[in-house]
Image (cartoon, rainbow, N blue to C red; front, side, top):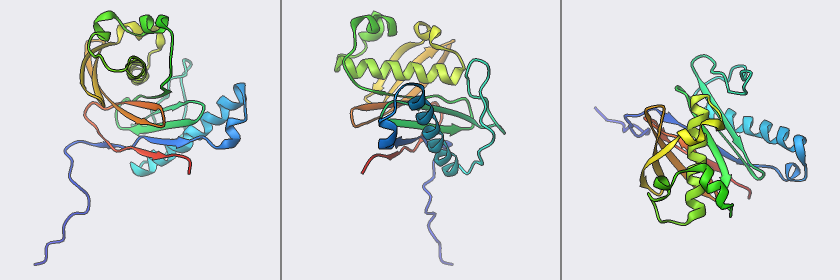
Length: 203
């Protein structure tokens, strides 16, 4: 009997497919609410790709009165966008994703984002570390359905490597994975998922 190898590599963890899309040039020319609206719509295109990769039929995407995405048919989703890029993901458990451009920022933001013990965990480039922390905490807060008010309650308790760290929030440990590209960073709640990134940049 001929044995045909399985073309799909086995993984003991469920897979999620975060998708990053470059914003079209026409969006770059917009400003204010109109630009935010177009970026949000573009992020939903990224979500459509993530859902297709996960073999999920997108339902009616709704948010609660606080703007928290509501699950549909047992599926959770998260969107994020900046001026040049958007990202989105769908998952079977609460999920959060956040994107930022790595750039200089004020010392006041450092103090607001994390405590001294957290900054002492690494001596890498301070601005890269800042946006690792910021996007990681944002991802956890999105997955939890809470807002930025709980930023100080999200604590970085361990840095595994350049692409993973651990957050303690509400007496729960959250594993975060990062993806770096074009002076940007995207962070996502990994936990027990295997993450397969899709990055569609400008050509």
